[in-house]
Image 1 (cartoon, helix red, strand yellow):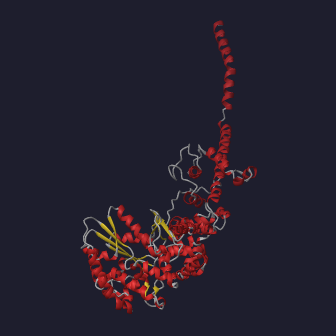
Image 2 (cartoon, rainbow, N blue to C red):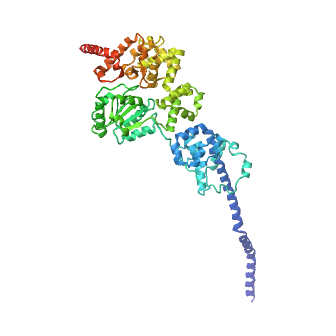
Length: 617
């Protein structure tokens, strides 16, 4: 009995001893309520996330601020022209309208964020892409502005996908504030945070794409590849003959250089030939591109002998159908030469529109790119404060639109870049030949030595700066010396081109204009006629006062001078040396002049005797 009571007492004692521990355990269990702790943690986590979102919101304000610093409104307008096709392909009509509507830097604020990033990626030359390029996550050690701009875009896109883990957020945020400031971009922090939306970007989670814009045309080896050049190359992939036709100064020779580069990259042989060499073309051993610049004449039509047209058509027909194998031909011809040629010599192949590329028309993007490249080499190159640097392209387009098309717009814009006075003269675009004649006559009155040095280079076509001028140079002017030409080059850029110490006129049109400007000064004119290459004179001289077009120089006024008969005899003698018996089969207008008809046969006999004597020696 006592034993059982003792056991019961011990059990009760044990139960009493453990009771407090159980109560504590139960109380502790009751305190482990998940709901209150979870709510607190969630609230704290949400605050952290909201702060991240606010930082991301702040970072999205920096791209437009950077854009204002890096892209001037005038530069934007030019870029819109150069990238017009790509912009049309990537942007909606409304976005394009907004971009065109930018009139001041503040207008950038109205642009869509997608447009902002696209302009930064493609138009801001000082914002370099990350090492891996746009649309790739830059490595953490790359801290350029371009890399951080891309990080902002990528972080935003991840946020749009529901992610809130941005390891480099704080670093990018701090760098942006350090580089571009905080107050100017973000404003007062207290005001900014008081107006924040707790949800943060609740309704505008749209990703920002990475867009690569391409210019309408590119520059390859210093040549702007226009649609006309692309079209010519495309034709040559299926045809063997292509003709490039257009006004003098429209860029045909540059196009021929681009085509030459294309064939050489394709490992074709290329040969520069003249028009007379075309009639003797035979099958080549390897693939060969024959490039004929200035067909029919470099300055004006030089006239082909009778029978040449049949031979020419026959050869080109054989090349085109492949009878003469492994051969392609590109022919370049001035519009005014083509028109005069067709009046006297019917060449059927030149009338084939299926193989003819009209070179005159240029897109606005091409015109702008040509103009900008010319600006780099023009007067603005040596004058950083020149007013022409800030000229609006719309003004240039407006000027060029007034051209009647007799001279190519690339030549007109090139002369404007070198000589801004011409740009300010409305008559230059409307009547460039007449205006340039007046320009050079004024030079003759005000800067006599400069004009005569230029006229001398026109006469000889190429002058070596390492040798003295010819002994007859003094007949033009006593100051026409090698030193005088070098001084002219240094003081009057924009007229001469130098390469390997050889000076030539910057463009063939200047030869045309300088000869015409000298025609009213008989003493100078006769010196030029006696010493200029006869092939050039036959292209540019016409007998009457009225000439087929403005590029020719009439001899009617010069003939009234008593001494001109002796000058004309020199012309006849030099013509006999150049043309020989072919002159009788040519329909050159000078052939029908009285003195030519009277003296040509006599001078030809003299040339034959002279050559026979030279051969015997």
